[in-house]
Image (cartoon, rainbow, N blue to C red; front, side, top):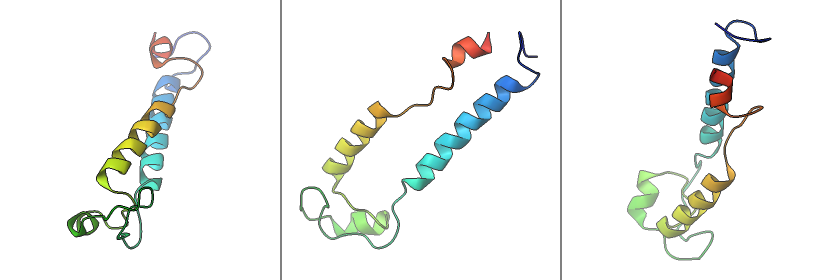
Amino acid sequence: MAGGWARDGAVQEQIDASVADAVRLAREQLPEGESLLCCQECDEDIPELRGQAMPGVRYCVQCQSELEKLMSHSMGFNRKGSKDSQLK
């Protein structure tokens, strides 16, 4: 049941859209193709087993971790206010 001016199901549609966006973004970030032998960032060797485990890998573990930290701080979906305010 939606409240105020929102129609029934509007909150769930908003949640579904946020989840779909997050899934799409995660799929776009999956590596593709052949793994590199050296890290694209620091030129350190990428272990062969890492390349086999994650086809298309471009970074060593350390550089990948740092990249993911940077990306996690800049990401987030917020569609017209917080989710908590929409659910009340």
